[in-house]
Length: 326
Image (cartoon, rainbow, N blue to C red; front, side, top):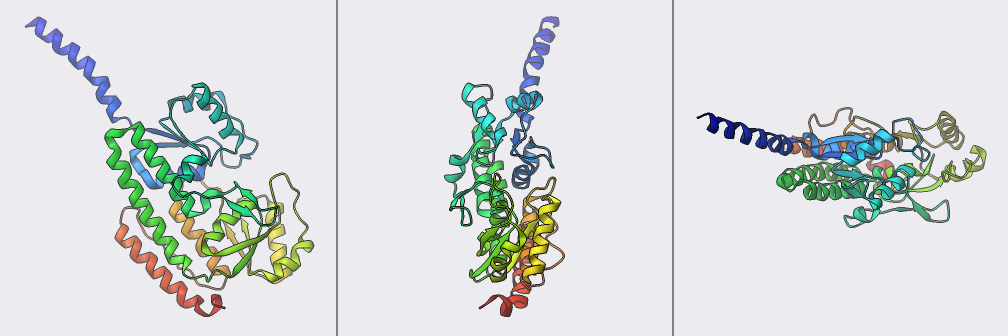
């Protein structure tokens, strides 16, 4: 009997760690907070999500800390904006040398899912790598690539990850359809910085100039941009940008007589779909429409989400039918 109990204790001690490991959620590490918002919105409680670059820090200057490298070593999946940030270039080096082993997502992974760069029309038509997540098509590509990476890292829960992605896709596409039908595609905007372009062009509004053309280029004077803005339909700027640039955008709006729209480029701890809806509504309001104050209550009630978003489209369409159709 004593011998039997010893065997049982040994078996329990062997099996317990396996049970704990099976219940542990995959760790997803994102380079910036908006990417974490996409992952959290899509996969919810099925994953643990953290991000590396603190809000308010310059992502083009930030460097990984030793503790963050240790965190990356534990990650099941690592999500980047594509690979152009210094932190992301370091992640690529760590992956290549074998320091980190998790599924690591870069530009090519996203392109396979429909991701695209927009050309900076105001700066030699170079690819714009800034703010790519603001385009909902890109957000879907990032989420889909993450879903596939999660399946590789944790195949036992593949159905859970796929269901999360599919729910997220329904909600994102519903917002896209509700707002995109309101713009006829002949509108233009002057933006504050390159990231703003991605919040506009999926709606059919072309960014024709930028107050700050690129990260390494000085801002253009307001008076110099007034003639261009006067021919555009709206001036767009980010609430989370430097005060000097926000003031420049507001002054440009005032001097050109064109309305301004305030959007968010960086945020934390809010669902991606809510920020997408808020940014889209802000742009539509600037063009003369009236957006509703309330959105859908929950992520999981997809039927209600579709119904509310369709109502949004009807309300805005009625308000903007004359304003936006030229």
